[in-house]
Image 1 (spheres, rainbow, N blue to C red):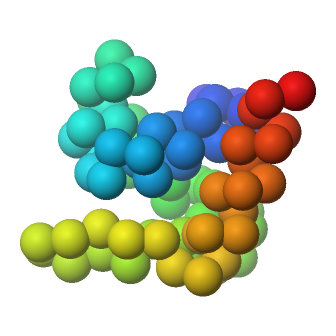
Image 2 (cartoon, rainbow, N blue to C red):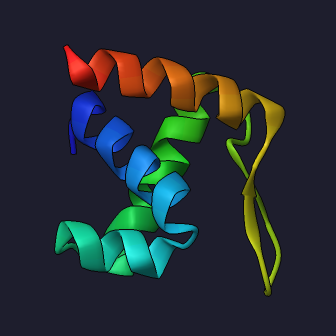
Length: 75
């Protein structure tokens, strides 16, 4: 998956509130979503989401990156 696709997956997860929901929206497997987010977090050097078994939320860095990703994808 290329960097633009990873950003698209990230935005989809943030908007859907779940990896599974983002996968369904993008027609990719939840495992592919997990790999894309892990790759993006590794490249950026930090966590973008706070994950628990019951919830998923953006970290501060994730919220900042979401704004940037939306601007870049809109162009």
